[in-house]
Amino acid sequence: MRIQGCFIHTFNYLPAQIIEIKILGVSSVLVKLRNLLLVLSLGVLASGCATGRGEVDVKVAETANPAAGIAVKILEISDKRLFEISPKQPSVPSLKNKEDYENPEVKARAIARKRNSYGIALGDIVLPEGKTVSQLVQAALENGLKESGYHIVNSEQSDYENVLVLEADITEYWAWFNPGFWSVTATHRARVELIGDWPLINEERTITGEGQSSGMAITTKQWQEALEEGTENLSKDLQKKLKQPGS
Image (cartoon, rainbow, N blue to C red):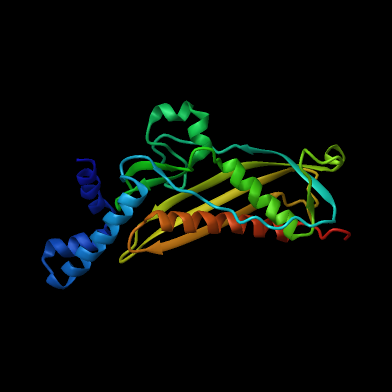
């Protein structure tokens, strides 16, 4: 019954134009509709029922830590995202279950909300157990620092207390669904405010990243690609704003 329920809900992901053409009885579209529905149903089963909670693992490739260079440490990454109940815009974080708005562990892992082609909110998407948005952002910022020639120090090193102390607030990190005519798009946007002694070129302390992935249906693959691209671009934006060591 659970699979059957998920399968029925896949119709909600179909672009409205295809549904309208089917209703008009244009036979040339029926094969495309059948194939699209097959791909879509497989995607829904892979990432969880559209109306339930799904999990998507977002990976951040680790950059090699320079052996030398100005030593820095990221002391804290604070998740300051604001979640709303039934927001008007899909880009605003929201959760399916109202009780989860008071659950910091769920909010720390929440990264997206599934919706149908009419914009109606369905199930939410979270990171796997043990992973948080703060951890992803910290990894992205550390990559940006290392790519720019800064040496990341951890708490086990002797000089940990005598290095530049960096912090950041996450004000945006969310992915959402955009319907299209023959395809759909997953979009991810991140925004972070830098706090502390960041070695910046100027006083601009806001860094951003955005990612997109399109397909015949929104599956785990599209969510992953959009989220990972947005997170990587967050790191690249930081690199543009950092001073080169020694400058």
